Amino acid sequence: MNGPTTTPSAASTSTPTAAPAPAPNPGPDPSTGAGSFTDRDTDRDRAVAAAVGQGLVGPGEPVVGLLDVVGIRRSAGELRAAFEEFTAPGTPVLHAFAVKAASLVPVLRLLAQEGLGCEVASPGELALARAAGVPASRTVLDSPAKTPAELREALALGIAVNADNPEELARIDRLMSSAPTTAPVGLRVNPQIGGGTIGAMSTATETSKFGVALRDEGARDWVVQAYLERPWLTRLHAHVGSQGMPLELMAEGVRALFGLAEEINEKTQLTGRRQIETLDIGGGLPVNFTSDAVSPTFREYAEALRSAVPGLFSGRYGLVTEFGRSLLAKHGTVVARVEYAKSAGGRPIAITHAGAQVATRTVFVPDAWPIRVEAYDAQGRPKTGAPVSQDIAGPCCFAGDLVAENRLLPLLESGDHAALLDTGAYYFSTHFAYNSLPRPGIYGYAAADDGTVRFATVRTPQTLEELTAESGAAQADALRELE
Ligand SMILES: *Cc1c(COP(=O)(O)O)cnc(C)c1O
Image (cartoon, rainbow, N blue to C red; front, side, top):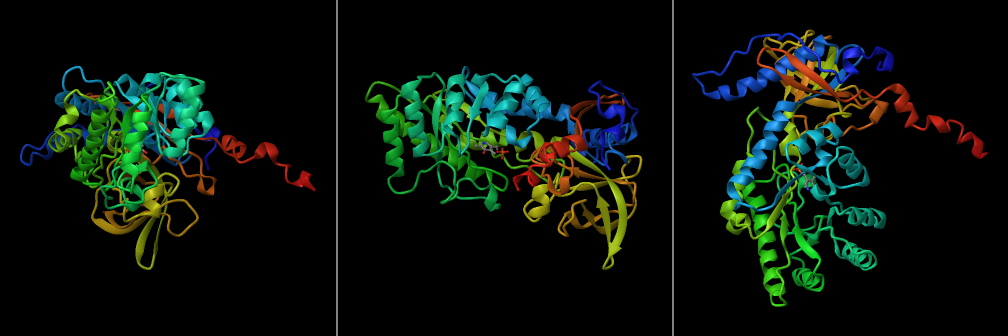
């Protein structure tokens, strides 16, 4: 169903192409004031129509990921502006994008152009950051399971490393004595301030697997002592997200981080040095998946931080942030063809090409990760008509492969398209290879005021040759030869 020969030429080139607008921009609605989101809706609608019109999605490529490049730039600018507004002039601030949220080299390079760095948590993510040209000085390595080889490489490159636990710190001790480095090193702590509404997303619970659990007996004293013994330990890190966490609780975690840094610096000052220079406050800002409104905003988070931790922006510490979802989620859309429309038990079901392979969390944990779905017709125009309660199913061969259940939408028919909104982070860039479904193509778009939409290829659709190769095709005889 999805091979290289069916790829339309427009889909396999990064040459920008243009398409006419499906509809003129209706403009803001003066009576409701809700018009500030009208442009964004229109851009998405235009992009869907253009993607269908140009064959980026169609019978041969039945699912595609679209990224709003203008929106990504806007979010990066909003993040920078929020911190610039509150920090004392001259304070070093590095916004390191959490690569796992959108592990796509062109996205990392776009963000780098917007002044962001990368937070990486595996050799693969580090390789992507390097392929994007992100310098070591703007890269931060966090991961709870770094191998000695990874640590050695990061320290040799000068990449900032946050140690997760006492055993890892002991490994770094040994590396430091054999090959001194100027790479900044920090320790990740878990302030244990409690979790949000999604257990699997809560990093600061009593028993979280991340960092040194600060409120455990003896832990705080151990951390302070660890800094006193290591003059090169100059950073302190916490990431207390993410989705489902109230802003106040996040700020509470940063307050605990700040308090610990102050305590450590008071003690090291007695020996003549102010040791912790940089606080890495992590990412974890939640995203609104119920409408186009950006809420909370980076500015609201910065305000919450300023009131909970007034000293944070004083310039006494350099700052590192590690936002992922909040930078990308609103700017991605999955567009999938409806292959069949049917009904079961009296309920209509649209069988589409977007399921667990591109919306893994939503399919497996639907209550925690509901997403918006929009109906488009065969030409990619917004579908009108009376809303009908229906299931939006994916192509995977298990019964639970539904991206929305009992959802009110204009009735989807075969040949129509279903769009999964707010899927720019942790969705199509985080493919799940169930049923050997190929990774879909991903295209960035920019909609111009004159109604044209230009696309650039971010990731080409995976071919069946690539898919069989990574499934061991080169070793087809290996098991027979064992006998
Ligand atoms: C995943 C992760 C992030 C990014 O979290 P978001 O919720 O996407 O902002 C930042 N830091 C660390 C250490 C992470 O594991």
